[in-house]
Length: 387
Image 1 (cartoon, rainbow, N blue to C red):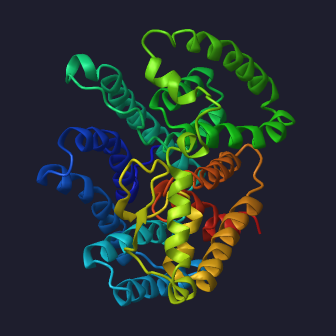
Image 2: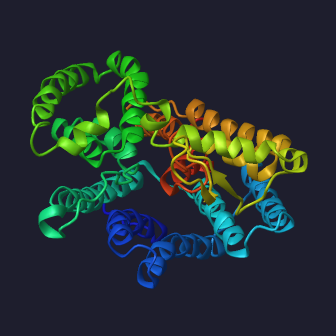
């Protein structure tokens, strides 16, 4: 049985395939006109594709999607009321919209198990190609470009792909994906995959996957020390990211996240109206440097600790309501799927890992795959299968 990807699925694959190359555009061209246009065009294009698909679909709003419409309106109004820059307000709203529209589309789409596997196979193939190429450039940048490029390639797409590899029972695919996560230098993604894998390991071990997982764990334990043995030569910059020095601060090991949260909290709590009514989309604040010899950074946008953003944008009361709604969507997606032998339980693990990763990166609103998976697991078809 042959199944073609829908226009939305093709757009998602293209989005994630091109994203690693956009990282190179950013470090090479910076905020030049060429880089500015390219970097900011991808998400609106994907949003437009999903929106057009929704126009030609029969759509039914559930509790989350109904509330999300009101949150978008409120966030925009609050943004303009707080005097935020119009471009920043529109950008902030677009971040929220992409996740909301992906959820709305897939919660109303009857995506079969076979279609889901075809999509995951396609995005795995294309993304592993692009991420591998870009990582190769990162490590050879000194020879190719004459500059050292910071190791920090966003590769959260590998979170669901790692669980797809477990579903496939492919040692090679899982270890290859894990290697790319390590080589990317993204500690947050590595921690999210590790914790998600750990939380799901025992249930899977008790199922028919126990032999595969036991052998896979043994392979990892053997390969990791072997890989780290290269630390003194080619991978010095990578090893330094995972080394521990007790003289360095928490802010250093969080890549500035700790200072970011503190600065954002100070901004949010410095005004009672902002605290309770929110700063709206497009809010900016001043990042206070831990090292007082460095100048503070003005017009800092968003917080990598994703769960703080709804509180600042919508205010304390509405922010808590939004987080409760998000938690309900996640919990429903985790509780509904009980199909033995299905790929969907593995997608639950990916959602848990994404929820963990949201503590380290701004992905709560605008990670298309996260909201696609939430939509699929909360779709009418999935509800019918488990009723």
